[in-house]
Image (cartoon, rainbow, N blue to C red; front, side):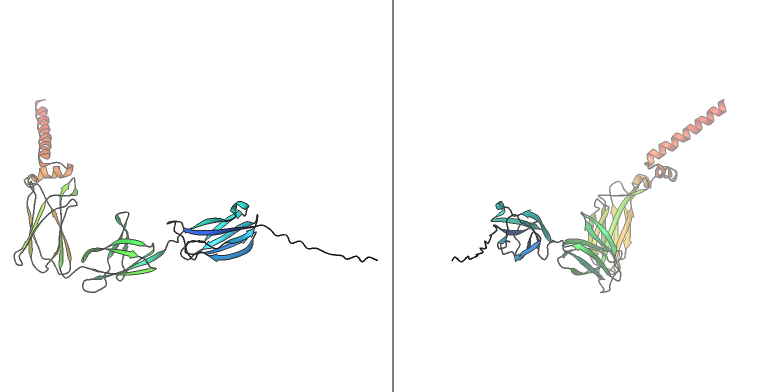
Length: 320
């Protein structure tokens, strides 16, 4: 008699695996990023999370052949990035896949506190240099102004006040908040001249004119040439003394005056220069010259021409 034995065999099917690494780099510099967190999914299921080493690489991830691989890469200070997806085919086995992270734009606030030389908070105008020009104008309130949400970087500012003058300074923003204290003015006085002539009713800088300022009492004596903007800036001078000044230029009538600079204040003196021809021009001709923007000689010729026509007209009227 034979005994029948039923036997069941189990066959384990080993699926082929694909292994790969993820390498993470900085998108701007190309440098490897250490300690980036890399999370990988295969067909929607979590495979695992690994962190990059000093070379910016993870250990091996292993997924089933032909699985659809997605993932996420993140690191503090960078914008989170997604691995949009790829099929784990045989050609991906043993490969290193590079992912680039974009640095986050760090931003912060610059708080500027303005004091005058006496130690008092001063309300003044503040400008930030933008594209090489002074702009982004703001006015302090109780001596304080805040430029908020600026990208990290270096900025140039100017504080301007009609009494205490101007001051420029540079601020490097490298933290969420930067506080800067600025003191304007000094116990001394500031003196600046603006020298011009009039052309067709407009002020034009009288470039090249000389401004001589002196004070015999303290032995001060200085001469400056007017720049392309019409200014002669003497800067700080000792206050509470009487200074004499003279403005000269060839062909123009010299201009003389006096100034008594006050302590801690800025003084801007406007000087209108007239040519010797204009100074000698009779009132009628000068009025015509100013009206049309002419010289005195041109105005004189015009007036005489009109007068001649009138006389000629009168003579014709008498004769005929």
